[in-house]
Length: 542
Image (cartoon, rainbow, N blue to C red):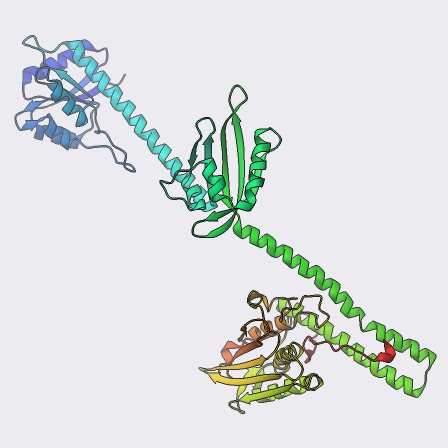
């Protein structure tokens, strides 16, 4: 067995001899001794070495035991824990002064021993005090180490809870005491000192419309009829209504009665929003597919009637009339397919832009010319204001025409007959802005952020409305972005008109326009009529 090294601090050589003799005679353990006669000398010894124990006389020539206890190093502090002296200390007090003994214990000593009379120190008393001091010191060290480990584990758990957004609860059913984690309080917006109870959670934190379902889930768990897995809403004091998922386990005592209910909560608000968005997207997709089938089938009926008419009456007059109908309907089908192909190409980054310097006034004129028949049929007037007729942009002319035809057609379709449409072109700080404004149906506030999404209806129409595929504004946005620009929609509300503003780099800012080349397949010329589908209403072919 390795001997213990003991530092004996006493200014009296005879007392030091007595202490050494007492330890040798009172313990089966072997010892090695280092001696010091003053506080200063002992402090020096402590700098040079570590000891298994220190036996310290209270009164020394240059101070008292308190002075040396103040200079003995402490173990490293950890997260506010009270630390002990590096070595265990036994203080030999002068007489049976228990008050002094309490004071040295408060200073960090493990034991104190009163000095004996003229007969010296009793061997077993000193040996037992040293053994006890070493044991207490070791035990305290183990407690501190375990506490450190526990706190580190708690901190790791807290970090994991925070990162995952998981709040933990533990409800002692018999005492009705609820213990919750820090993240649980953050999840519900509770303060550090706020009391948590089942009744308060149910009636103050859970959304009123979800309380009945929560109670039913809890009852099923307590009755042994299922697991506890719920999704419900809470009312957060700062964040408002949030969605939370909960999962818990019921613990029973030896009699089979519920004793504890433990579990976790996690905020699933974003997941719930994503789920709703997927459901809505799926609904839009299904509705669009049904509508697309309808739109593609519509032109076939007039074509079929025209073919039957040609077979029954193949006269020159009927051939000319049927040919015109067939040409109209084929053009209609082509436009539908062109729009779908454009959306697909843009989505897969395979559209090709043929960039050149283009006078913007020519683009606006071509777009208006394309839409003129629609405007005339509705007795509408298009008012154009171009500040600089020589204004040039570096762009794909056909695609720009496609952008503004879509916007003009929307303005005409969703405005009353006899109304006006304004096209205004301005330059500002190297950017060109083109505004297309109407007096039509306007846009709902909640529709504005989604107006450029595929298959949505730009003017509050449902996807089933038989008036285009709902991809026109998507094409406008994506084609504009391919030109280094952007587009935004404005409206004061339903019935108050709409305004779409396209912003493009001016002709001298070519670096902002990055040409995109088609990766596969031949380039299909754009449909300059955008997503507009003209219905064939020839009564003789209906």
